Each structure stands twice: as structure tokens, then as C-alpha cells.
Length: 180
Image (tube, rainbow, N blue to C red; front, top):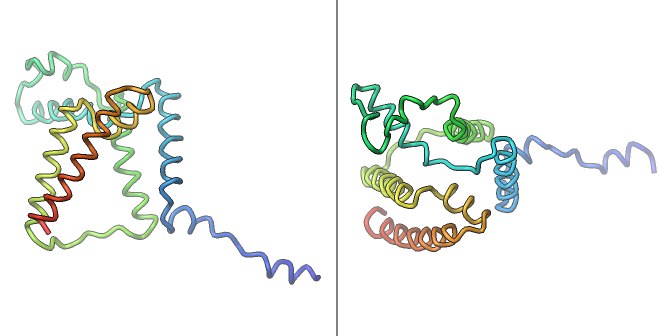
């Protein structure tokens, strides 16, 4: 067989399409998350968390608009010591947002959509508030309380798993009943 026929039979692999255009499987996504979370622990010595730092962001915002929140017992002077650029959770949160934006741009799937109804806006605001309150009550979000908790073989991770499952069922039924 000639070399031309052999080369014609070989298909060119389009890695750009595989990595950035096609959807990844859940297994691929899970493996990437595990690798990145492990790398974060190796580099920083801390597990992955998202919501724990948000109260300091809120306190800094309050100070920006003239409220002296650093004297409140919840902050107890922590706002004066907080430096955004030296905060690993702050940097990883920014990385999550920029990474999501970059992946949408690379896949050419970034769109600003028209709001179909104000029910969607109400559902989004209500869902965000409930998720925020739940994350603060649970002392972490699905990243810190679930993934980090399960990987550390902690009971709180399993309890969080049970209640996040129940919450998803209740939230889905509420969404269907009142907002769709």
C-alpha cells in the first residue's frame, strides 16, 4: 500500500474541537475538577471553597459606601486585615468566573439573552438569595461543604449531600409550579 493511501486513511484529530467546542462528558468534567482541586491543595495547603470569603467582600463593600462594618462582632477587625490579592479564595473565585467566561467565548456560545418574563427574574433573585442563605447556614457551598467534605471523609459532607438533594427536589417542584 502506498504512503499516500495510508495517510488518506488516517483522520486528522482536531484537538481544538475536542477541548473547546464539543461538550465534555460528566466523567471528564469530574476528573478535571478533581485534578484542579488536588493541585489547589498541593499548592496552597487549603481545600477548595467559594462562599466562605463572600462575607468579607460584603464587609469591604459596606466600608466602601461609608459603613464602619469592621467594628461589628461578625468581622471583629478582620476587614482591616483583609487583602483581596492575598486571599486564595478570592483569587480562585475570580478564576472561576473568568474561566467560565473564557470557556463560553472559546466555544462561541456566549450570548446575552433577552429576559422572557419577569417571573424568570424573580425566580433567579429568589434562588440566589436562598442559595446564599443556605451556604452561610451550612458553613459552605457545594464546593466547600460537599466536595471538600466528602473527600475528607467528613460526616458533614454526607449530611450536606442529603439536604442538597432534598433542596434540589423541592426547588425544582417550586420552579415548575410557580415560575414556568
